[in-house]
Image (cartoon, rainbow, N blue to C red; front, side, top):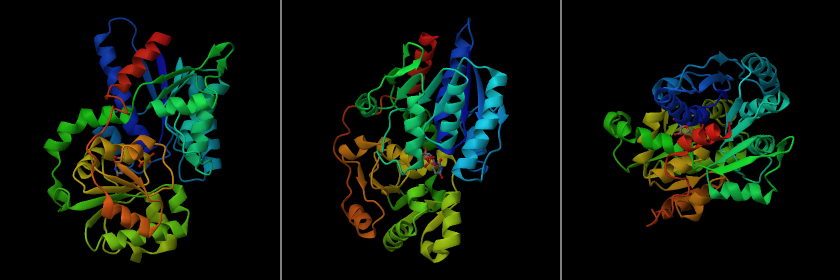
Length: 371
Ligand code: UDP
């Protein structure tokens, strides 16, 4: 069986590592049919600290194809990816195309599969912010609609799909397959948790347990809006008077700050380049609080039992908010500061809303069963 995995952005490398590992295990233990995973990297994230380091650290097989599409706007990026992905997919003629999440790479991969009538697997299906101004929301809604198999991370994602009338017919008379398998990012956290503890020492950032807050910021709804950026950065300035603020800065955010906001807004903050996955988990698990507009980090905060303040007006990861581990503060200074003053760790975590860390195994088993 041949699976063409199409990826291109940091969170996709992390998610893909879980499946690649299970595929390798399956191939080692199985005497019969092998799963041949062919990886296509679109190039969407290309800096070595946003891409190569994840392949190396997480043992993801080197991509078989690299499309080199990056550094252009949404339309051009998606168009170039479509053109290049179509020829790679025609050449490989896989049994399945597999895409992750909600980036332009996800949408381009999904469209190519649908047009070539190749069954499409969407991992992390069914999430909704219900805000179509987010490029990610457009990508995920469209990808879900043309997927053959939708692997959802939560019951909430399944409910979202049901509310929209899913399942639809995907090919001929066949209905889409929809499964709640849990979140593949939990698989990755669990797999590396001992290594993170044993190998990565907090002292390299000159901080101690719970004595700093960790912040990441990169969503277009923030970086493309000067007043939101100013609101968030002013709050961080205030926070830095009391706490060390460690901020691994996304390349897009750095560009925006250099161009429009000005570096003065970063004074007092501990700005570092994007860090590799294991280092990031170390920083997350020992933080007092995580402030972020990242989807993945909201969940990781929850997995590490660290309170989170989300710098957005809505979230797809509603369980973290419902269970009291995450507060939506938007981009308003006062709300962010008030949230930091009041955050605490709830007593309970409830019933595994993101599964038990075996999502990748479930996904591969389902694909084998569907064959
Ligand atoms: N991450 C990382 N290094 C960093 C920042 C983030 O390894 O400097 C990881 C983080 O732990 C999480 C993932 O990248 O696993 C989240 O990716 P990102 O925030 O880029 O995307 P999103 O989850 O918002 O789609």
